[in-house]
Length: 300
Length: 300
Image 1 (cartoon, one colour):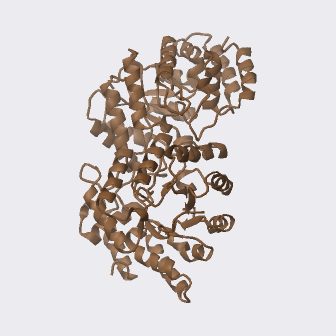
Image 2 (cartoon, chains in turn yellow, blue; image 1 turned 180 degrees about the horizontal axis):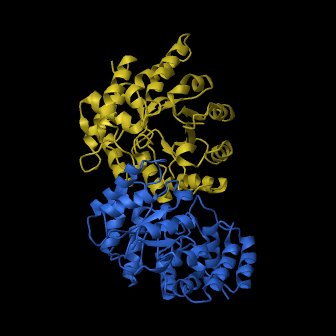
């Protein structure tokens, strides 16, 4: 396994800001990206939280180019590049490699339900072959509740065998620690990122690489602190604190809520905008959310 | 309701052929499109059966242009234009209008699960507003088993109120006749297409506009015959015959099976190719399928 460790730690699936006409606001995007990276976080642009699937391929390429043009460290980036269409996944992944991204986060094609394992293997294999670049590092995105298409251990095993070094790890957003633990145990060197800060300590103890969580957009520094100090005696206390934070966010329409908090934090109301089918967080509930976050020391 | 009736009847979600490198084979696509239209069928390119979501926007625009360049009657076409990304749906729909397509078939954005009705309304409304062309005719694509995002009667009601004349009808692939009947009953003039030939007679009796079915790729003429003659005394007999045909196809991996049959019918083995995550129909099962189809008089 030769995957670089430049992505280890906490990656933020950075929120995507929109203009009044719902076009992508590149300048504002870069400002948040820089703020997050200044906290020591890596970035996972175009994830679920980034409304990545609500963006066209051209829009995503434009944002990747903007990140590179801003001089941000592309080795610390894992853009989402897995689309329903093979041709889209290839184009995005190849572009990410060209820009020097440390890896790409690949959803399986998610329109057809109950695809065979052979079909899913072919989807990843054809993408990897077409990108055809030894620098490619693929992180498999397991999020069955959203994609409806799970990435099983046996599929990972086949992909690792066919593309050692290229298939580098996974983000597991299932919330099922037993699955994360099994990935860590079965595939030494395979980099497993918990999709929730609730499981940082558990996944680090199991040999994981870190965490990629929506909430890193507003509370990533604390997550990174736990990832770095998981072996220290008071790590459990930090995990408990993160769970307190998480309980504040739980049950909210998460992406819209994170955008509302970002609007308040930055003083930029434009952050509230989402692309449909998402809807804006109710403005009348913002104050309560902000108070609760401040009450637990988040957003001081 | 001012939707034109040029689309009434049977539309084939025409299969998409691929080259050895899985690129789109435009020439072969046009040949099948012409064959189907010569049978009196309209076309619904880029549907589920067309592997529409496995194609990039550029590939779909290329195929639309090829259909127009081939001189085929664009008024008889309802291309699939509903994508996860608003920007993609707008670009495809606007292009379809420019080419004179009789309508567009719009899936809801299907990545985020359990979207609110407000969010879905906004997704369709923003698309319609951005296309901004009075010639647009939107057919809503209700296929909850595949998209996981149903289009409810109350959503249709809101859309019809906001965009009368533009929101023109629906394809209902739920298989639930009660839902099709409710659409016909509640929304006079709204054009309802059954997503299965099993329900042609029922939906025509309820006031529907026709049928859009995968199987029209190989047996569309018989479906069209029933749509045209549904009021004749022996219509039920024709419906029963179609059900016999359908029972042969049922349980098969449908898209791959239709491509295998098309490969045999045309003598062009290239038709067997699918894009992942689909997999080819097992060659060793082709002969049995062909025999069964011939046994009921299909493919004579």
